[in-house]
Image 1 (cartoon, rainbow, N blue to C red):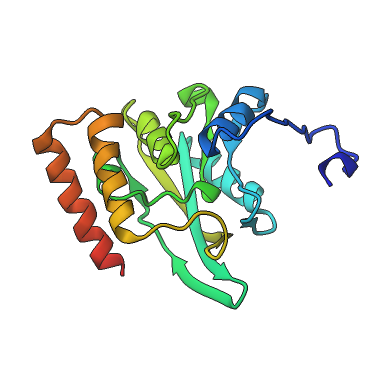
Image 2: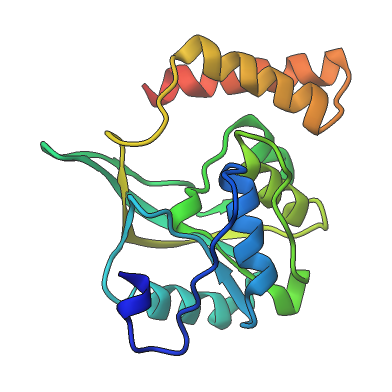
Length: 195
């Protein structure tokens, strides 16, 4: 299907083996030649004019990283509407990843070309934290501009998600036990509140 598009802006990159989402996304980041980097997995959707609306928002405030509201859906129909906070800082994001990967755009002119950590899960959160650790704040474009499919791909139970979040703090971010415990408790509380 991609090869059938007659548009030289669209580049097909084929990897020889499945290295996971982080490897695939990093290959796209490496090949990208534009100022802005955005992400869309094959089972999710962008609304019409998503890029136009969000880029105007970013440029109006010179924002380094932005994200939007999004709608969850399944083949049965619409699910929860996700409305993240207007802004998020590094410390706030440590408690809860409020930036949906399918909604995120970052500006390489401000933060440089940044790559996702090569981990199997939470690689998007790792990238947002890397950008925000430079002292930046991420800004929400307050419109529903994407649709996130929840009935395909890899699913995980809550216990597995919690275990991985703990490992993310300890191994990827190299937090000590006390710091990891602080953020993990916040993560758990926010998870209960979201439900």
